[in-house]
Amino acid sequence: MLNSLYEKTKTWGPGSCMVAFYFFSLIPVALTLTISSYLPELHLKHIVISSFEVFIKSLFFAPWFETLLIQVVLTKLFSVMKCRPTSIIIAVSVIFSLFHLSNGWVYPIILFIPGLMFSWNYFLYFEKNEAAWGALSTSVLHFLYNFTIFVIIPMINVVLTIYYDIDILN
Image: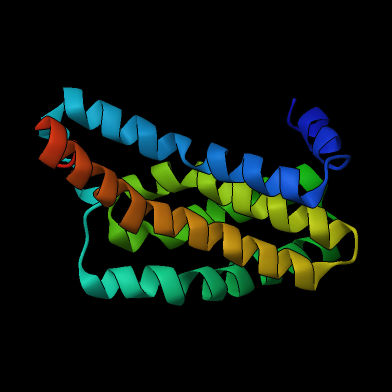
């Protein structure tokens, strides 16, 4: 199934893939917020609440550093080893997810799908010998994901709390 999806995305334009990958990467966040609303004892809401230091690192350093270190280097390494495209995409996303294990046990689970989307995005460019564009677009995609987590969701929460007395994060 993943092979057929991969083949279909190769025919899409880069902008279409990036938009689709962005929305798919947000699925775990939406699920986490929904589950934590019904099961508050799991304490999952802290995933989108963080410190200012983490905010700065997540927006301005992590997307670029992680794209270069994980997507670019590992994709090149696995392609030299002659791995199949879907195997490369899955392996890189698993490593991307495990890279975030130091944040807590739940992060690798939540970040697998975004990692899959980032790796897939990069690999589509890599396969067309446009690795520089792939690194740039993947970094932007990662930035947009982090921006949504650290800026958009808290802003939505502020509006819901002020105007509707609904607090999705606390």
